[in-house]
Length: 337
Image (tube, one colour):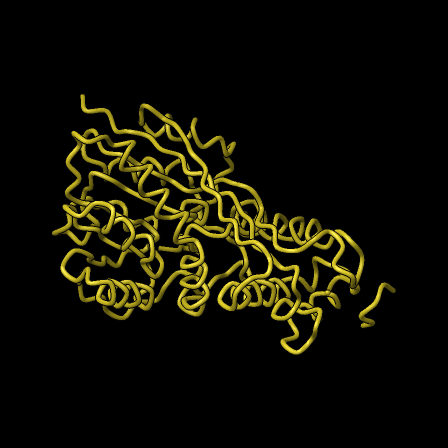
């Protein structure tokens, strides 16, 4: 294509992970937390069937780029709980590599933070991260396929147990029955406990409208492709149930009170540093792998230039690449009565 205008330690055994059921996010993972991809969905991966362990390094890079925003989110949750609420146990459902699990452990020094995920390789990363940060003994892991693994609140019955604070980032939308999943999460909360679900925000932005190659407006067309991917992914999930994604209403329908929300901003201006460029390269490479039937030949060619490590117009070298994303967290309290 022309480059001018004419791209815890619990033993987790062998298991067969469901490709649709994630334990973004993540922190993202996410998918964790993210910079958010698509409509905040964290969909920078290739097919509707997702191998989260293959994505482990990308998920961890994603979450680490967001560490300031994740720490701000954890501080907001601490404020939301108030000084009189003792937090002894925290569950990070769909923890991925445990970046947010460790942030929560640091924010609530009197609590055990438990990473809950369906991918043993990601849980191994969570434990390794906790050890590097000096959190060994305060961060534990629990293997659980979702949503089935949410059914048993009794930790002695292989369930995740109950918690005073439950965080879940971009995991619920990977489950067929999102409302049912929120109900199951609510059952894991102790009376007065807080559920925080990161499932909203704005699409991630990373390029100007006109990047000097291909047709202007590539970012908007990538957004549309990701929304198409998301619709297809949701339709293919086992037990998929259509629901109006009004997250405050969904939390209330799950039996929670004092429902609210807040939004954190990830703002990495141009020029990006090396880790942010590597994340963006990985993100666009995965988009390119999924886009054959979603974009036209010219846009696919533009993507090929953007992911070429040697191309001056590629994301590893171009001076105008940036990362900007807004992630919304919805919260609710389980009534004490």
